[in-house]
Image 1 (cartoon, rainbow, N blue to C red):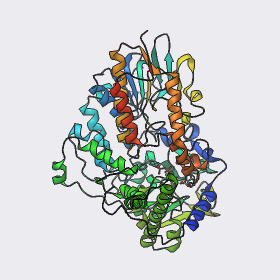
Image 2: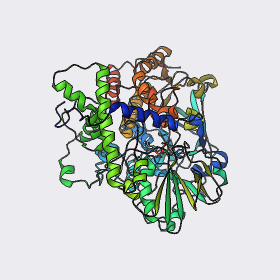
Image 3: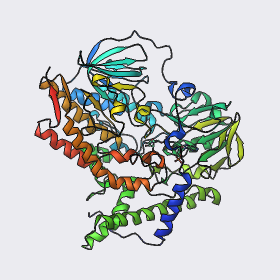
Image 4: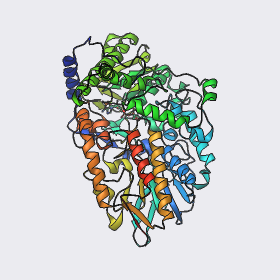
Length: 609
Ligand code: NDP
């Protein structure tokens, strides 16, 4: 590694043992016996928090569909759009996109809260930039531009003609007689498809905190993924004047709250932010795109940039940091002690390397905590806003307005860590630490079904050959070949997180998965196959690969403060990351590229009748 400034040992101006102990205590303080069960599924009497679509035409109707397509793509967010685009490029045109929203965009269709912004550099994050000849306006795009980009993809690839919007899948079942998937929806459809691509995204189902009394609140309330501009006024860029005379509670301080709290704080009469675990909030430093830089880009630039970003965030050697932002700074830091040792010609054991990374992690988190002290004037609030855990115990966040919001006289931080969350909700307020805070509105920034049971995350039944439920098949964890398909579920493909290379840059990860699946479908068709699915041996072998690489990561997660990365501190499977291919996205993509290169579809069983 010859990146300037990275080959340095961190300055040891702290006591690592004391930090380890503090992290342990902070984890213990937040562990709850009910783990994932503390969250309420947004269903039944809570359904309104996620099922109402503020953007679509409520009077929309259409006749039920009973026709057949070659490929049904479930989901019209970036992963579904990428699946469609890559299918078109592979010459597969007979497909349909089934989407619950009234337009494309997925997460960016639903999450239109004020300040919503991609937190990975937009030149890496927004898909198909080169294909569409589009350069984002800023280094980190806001939701308006991202949503428009998803519409741009829809238009460019002719996807509006094949979209079934405002349609939710209720059930997916394999019909062995027909050798087709049957897709039942909330619109009475019974569609058939030869292939199905699941492209539901990783955070498509909102969840609520199971706070006692939540159902008794008589004021206004909504989840951030269904921002109620009718109530707050304004739009994604601000102007929330409807809150001028309102006392507002925001519950949660994850990546979403970090972005929307500055806007609520600016407009609300009073804002109470209820925080259980502080986020690590690093610099954002957004800036407009430089036209000269944009013009200098050469063909292949986006793929190269994504590859470079992934190399850095996976701790691999690199010669240049193209993105050069707070994400890459974290990883350059983590690798700095290791790089310094290597530069001195030292050979490190994995344990020694892990120790060096831990020291660099402590040093970086000390900087994050020091930043809180620099910005937040109230010492109690500053103390409470400091995160005491390792980077990547939770998703790091980046924002330049969140911390200063706590210097406003109309904003109060309420630390609910001692009670492991908000104590209670009454008909007129939120109770924490024995004090009732009367509020007119509660905004739940409480996140999504990301690591809860797979059935909860997907939201509908999937039955394969012989009626086998996917959820029964996965009861001890995913069972896939390369994360994309499973035995007994013919012609069924999954885009998302699970037994594949995980990237913080999700859209790049989805793109490579989409290309790979399009290749398999194209090949299956070309070889006259009626069905394609993994062999039992190949699937088992891949599950073993995943088990063998997941262990180190699991140890890391089990020492972390609870959250969706580690099943709320549970040890069931090592959490969201416990089942992924830990050598990383670039290694995983290289492995799949080599697999495609061989051309023998190894590990897949193709049946021609
Ligand atoms: P998170 O799950 O990250 O945050 C939920 C918040 O609610 C946490 O702070 C949690 O505290 C808090 N909470 C839960 N239960 C309670 C309770 N009983 N009392 C008090 N607080 C409670 O959800 P987000 O929507 O913020 O983010 C989800 C993910 O979406 C992100 O991690 C990121 O991957 C993605 N995202 C990406 C963005 C981007 O820019 N690309 C922007 C926003 C989100 P605790 O931590 O203690 O559990």
